[in-house]
Length: 231
Ligand code: SME
Image (cartoon, rainbow, N blue to C red; front, side):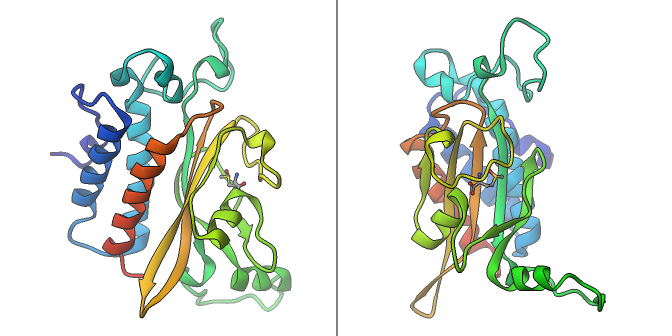
């Protein structure tokens, strides 16, 4: 099967639970054979994003479709050309990983005039990793003060589900069109210690885009990612 077909969603999949199991199983196949986090997270971000885009037409209608609704398999236009508005057509707007900056390769060539603030940031915060969707902020502070939904999920070591980002104190608005968000920490168990290596962040253009079913599915996926990569 061509790799790109991993993001197709069969018509037989009707529920979110079935959907996330399908995405999990496709990701397990895609990550088979190598353990580098850059490659595996790149395919994970693409798979999640494109599978979400492919899901609405298979999910049917009714209230639950609001989480994933959209009239086509594609990202809705930023400027509506029809009578429908963006809020009529919620869709996942971003699927991204933020990772602790110590995971990133150290520069081989440094510039003596480098901004000292950026060196400080590099030792204490999360940095944008593989993602799919529109451009996003690059740094997210986790210490001394966690920032945003991502920073909170990182320090709490648990998933943060935000139904309406406007009601979340400290939400970082990378994209003014985002209405809801879910962030799952990536927790590595090593030598009896829990190490948070980063977070998976999904944004949606609809209020209430994610719920407990998504949380269960995504937490299973981040557990798979953690054990499938070398960190
Ligand atoms: N909204 C996030 C920041 C990352 S963007 O959504 C990509 C937050 O509040 O942490």
